[in-house]
Amino acid sequence: MADAFKITNVTACTPGGPVEGAAIVVEAGRIVSVGADAPGPPACPERSRREVDGRGCYALPGFIDIHCH
Image (cartoon, rainbow, N blue to C red; front, side, top):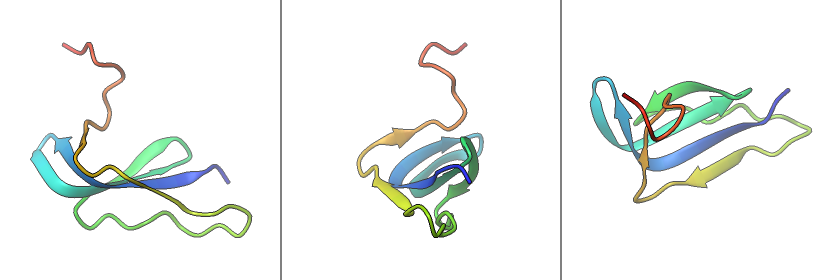
């Protein structure tokens, strides 16, 4: 199983507008959940669950680089 992690306490910029205090869950290199009530990644016996506090940061899920048109 690939690593899974959760980024918490960010302002996520989504197509529906910004979501303050959001969490973003990433599993196997893909964003699987974005929102104020996003669940954490599942526990994996051989790896610890990781959580990153993004307090004060903005997250722009899906952009490849900063130079988007």
